[in-house]
Figure 1 (cartoon, helix red, strand yellow):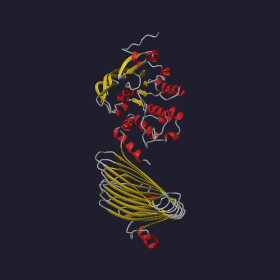
Figure 2 (cartoon, rainbow over the protein chains, first blue to last red):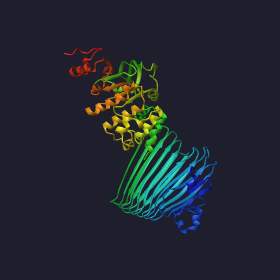
Figure 3 (cartoon, each protein chain N blue to C red):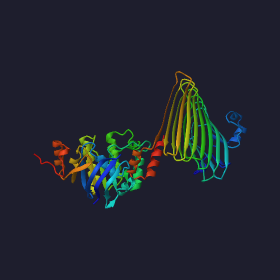
Figure 4 (cartoon, chains in turn brown, orange):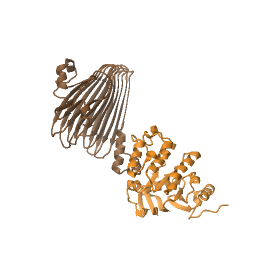
Length: 301
Length: 244
């Protein structure tokens, strides 16, 4: 990663290369946090062996940066991560998980909890960039306490062989979450499962999916909003099928347990418009350049 | 010769939409193509840019002496044929400035320093997605700026004057005159109303009806008078009925 010194947590294969705390943020290996702070055990799914703990205690002028990379062949990563944003604190986070070389055939698994305490706010951009042979299994739970606010973007810019992502969001009273999940899949089997639970009155949440499937891809997405209290939620699921040798399956689901809640969804799967493609070609772009522009435009949220 | 269309017959889903079209344009020449709705004007524009929807059944298109009938659309644009669409499609997620950057990189032009950009385009407008919720007038200006950025040898304007008020048509014509005609760039105006012609005085006016060019005249005013008086059908075999 460029500007490695600015990164709060840098892990390559199974080794922590770089870890930096600042006065307002404490960064530890997850295993050390488990030992140092007993309260963290409530959030870690199991006793961690690798992974990070990031605790933002006060507002920060610069974003928190994490980077977890694969560099050697057939490495298996199994991370347990915990991110905590303290009460009333506002933070930004940029997380990158990637490969540094081609043909590594690695495995990356991550179980994470992101806890936003009361009135905390987090803008979190999470980028994945993998090689053709990786197998990826991230699973994240976002817990939003009263009046917490989350903007979350997950973007998969280079897809692996196989990826299963499970993400859940639990929103307490007055909390809000704007979730965007974007993936450009090629020769990939992708399964997304995202659940947003409106657990408190006046909670507000939206999940937007933009999934592009190129040749050899099979993309399935099961998205669900559950309204337990008087709250608002919206699911916006859109797929773009680029090849006849690809498949997209979108299943939006709404579960309503409160008669005053308002939850809605929309879902569509489209193809690349020949008219748009031709229009861009009249501007001098080649077929592949025009296609790239259209797909990137679709993935722009 | 810049452009030479020879006996061009074009079909869509087996039906002839252009029938034996012949048209020549010299470098720097300004021509008009007039015709009623569904006469094939926009089809000819699309065929000149190689839209795969249309099949060339017979004939050839030569550009600068080279046969481009089978050349790709981007190849034609890169050789200097630019088209301003009548109804440009919306391209979600692609900002106008990003598209102009792409065009400028391909054609080695500088759209940012174009007078039209400075005068007509705010930064916030340039950040909008191409043709998404653009008004009719905004689409025309966007098409014009794209055409200028393409540094064309031949600029084709498909109904650039439709939906614009007279003041706006005059302004558009002035820009085209300054940026293209006076720079020696050939321009083909495809127009239903002919409103823009009074500001540009074409060297030759072609009349198209039912997929054929039925008349070619140097005096566009005479053509417009005839159409107004007798309709397009009276412009036959290269001749116009004499004014009474």
